[in-house]
Image 1 (cartoon, rainbow, N blue to C red):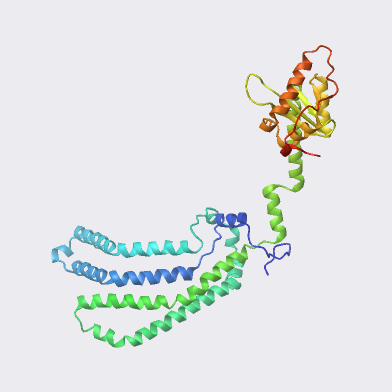
Image 2: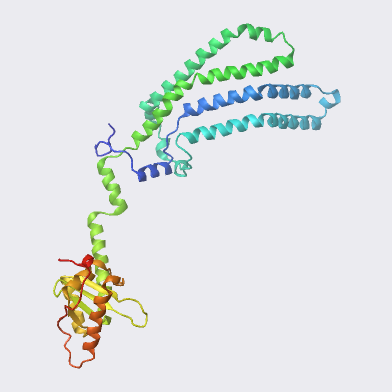
Length: 378
């Protein structure tokens, strides 16, 4: 079982953040044997379809290069032009085959590990220049695995090649007696089949190496439970920090809320447990809005500010509980409570018109009907 520097066992799968960070560093599963198998197989298939034409075309280029007049041979400019013409014609004939190999190389890499361009992987690392570290990689477990795969590829390909040579020895001898053009075309076709057989012999190695690379990469990225906890703390912050942030947010919200109480039209109380400050803008035509609300100590603070600013205090426990549990700050009251709140506001506006009314303590007001779904007993 893998362990981290603190000796803790890495038993947990990598988190999404760990996988993302690993991809940024270029640590993705790759299988060279898988890529080699597909490149050889598709390259051989390409030769099977294009090999004869490529062989005939190259032979034509070779013949044209040797079919020269005496004066052309001794003309440096002509020979230089012929050289570049030969190069361009050869590249032009081989270009479709090269493009096929390029496409297969990219596609085979994408099937394992996907597309990944990691700038961090290109940065020079002094640790990779350390000879001792290099020797440890060569003679370590991973180096031995790579050595075993290289030897396995060598012996598999060698054995298949010997078998193919023995099976086609007579054909190779007979090929030398044929005219050169058909002989080259046939040789190109048969060599393509040889390459297909050789590449298919690597299928077993690729079929073992690809799952192994996926498993090895997943195993290397495993994390201990403590590492996962530390990562969560780094992303979301420690519980203590989050608690302090939430408390600071509550304090700021309470301060902002308390500044709205002096402008409220009425504060409805429980009378001691809850306090809800309502404001009604008659010109806006909307419903009354809850500008502040709180329970216990916050409710006491709201009542104290309301008393200091001569905001009417009405004691209506059922209505206070209904609004407290159904409406948030800066929201309009529910439509089902319109009638009850309208009675409260009408009563408050009536009292405000009478001189000498004392608003310093809650005035009882129970002439309201609360819908059943809004009733609360707490």
